Image 1 (spheres, helix red, strand yellow):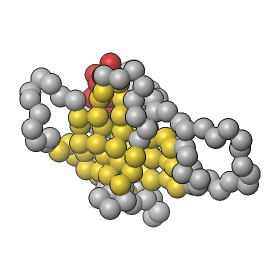
Image 2 (image 1 turned 120 degrees about the vertical axis):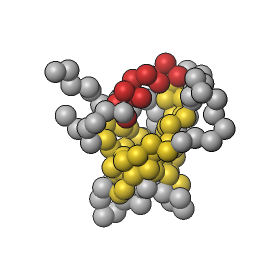
Image 3 (image 1 turned 30 degrees about the vertical axis):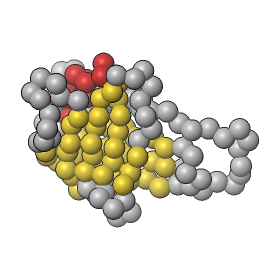
Length: 131
């Protein structure tokens, strides 16, 4: 049985020229991905965004959904988290569409993580599935 590896982090990380210490860890939102939602206005066969609802997986998490967008640009935009709606927005290159779809459509437990540094300059988001 082939174990699918987690989708690697494909997002840029903002960097400071001079590190400032001490730094706290920042915030981490963990979402247990449950059900795919239909996207309105997309043409069949031209799927470029996947939307999923879920539930927070930790007491501190406010995430309730994830939107995964696929872009033509070689360097996808940084992920974002909208605290008002609880939505994590992630961006992958269009070449990763099949891999991400396969991961999100498995019958395994699926999770989305979003981390933002305490100084607000660095963030990462990644998807993974249980073994």
